[in-house]
Image 1 (cartoon, one colour):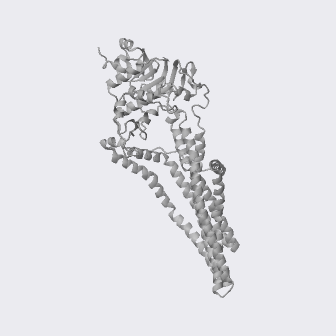
Image 2: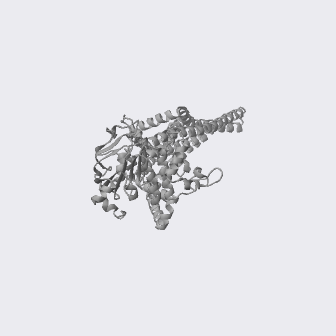
Image 3: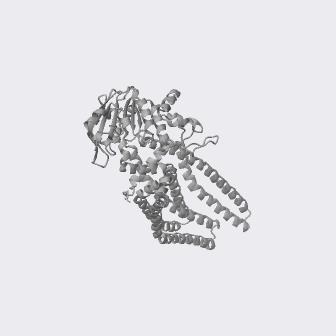
Length: 604
């Protein structure tokens, strides 16, 4: 398994910049919540110490009242009431703080995730095949997923720091050397915690691909549609074992290396415990020898305990957000990636008269092997074009070039003489209906919604809906569903009245996707193996209707001769090059690559 590059630990400057950026982003999303959170951090840190102070005074007053001091009883009651009021105030604040946290997390998560989704879905298409981009996206996603909690952690760090410093100051008010003992006791534990957290971060970075592979395996294992093949091929146990090995490499290995820190952690705990015992012994001696207030024991014990706990938590929390803050820079870098429409200004208002590819060459990112090499072709408005070739010839890639999902490394795609690079791609897509081999199955939606998703920008059109079903020959099986076209197309979905959805066959899904394509009613229809799961006779009828209407420009990829022979012009691809072009009759007479590919289907 490949190891992900380990990122260097943040410098103090980067840390400060990251903290300020987090605060800035959070403040924009929920300004009032942030102000209250900062105030709350101070209250949460100081109020317990103040409560401890009055609890100590209560103990002293009670001891004095027990010894016969007449006025001490009233003081004790007063201190009890103050302590109770402080405790009630702390409880009330905790409730308010919980609400503030939930509200802030919701607002921040909504703001960050919405931007993340929108930006990811508008990137240049080639980036979805680029591992560097996807790695960056995964780290940015980690940041976006946990960002609502990062500010909480930062607020917790502030609280813990104030708790530690306030405890230190409170101890020094009793005795300065108690403060020195506390500092000496805290340092080893903090240093150890920093080292442990750094090791955990390094381990996490080194196993980035391990967790990704494990996640993919888990996703595939839990998809109902995959179960049949997994069982038939005996892959269930194999993949479960692989998942276990990957989990051990990540989680179990992390637990094992943490074991190395156990004795060091024990030593630091002993030092802290010894410092606490020393402080308490000193207080006891002061009370016995110098008649110091008896409540000072409780005061010192609580303050030392809180200061040590604050120091440990401070170091631990600070390091747990180190990786999150580092991912902030990945998030910002990801959000700065250009989108396809960054510079395009030309918008297509009307359907084009001519689509032309001039000497197009293309290779995928991180590969120099050309998938398309010197492709040139012309498609006129209303023309019916077929693109054929063996698997891997470059047909689907050519379609992606025509649709503007990829940009050529050489040559140009021209729309009415305008380079597609200069055209706002969203305006071009409005003129296209594209059905790809890997069409989407919207299993969360009804059959009707699956069709209407073909065009969600315009109001629902019943006439267009009916025509789309008929053109795709989908009406017959759709009307037989439990609730007709309003039925869910997944038996895991259930209607409000308890009626369950229905599963569709591969051919039915393909007709549903084809109906969605027709519902879009765009002037240019692009079909990439659109009927591979549909019987030949049904396909022939579908294309007879489609090719009979000259208001559509149709570009299709198919291996069925009955479809291809109806085209006005056929382009034959081999190894990314057009080796033949012409009508079906012309190409058969030529007895070349086209003839060799389809001779088994020819009726001679």
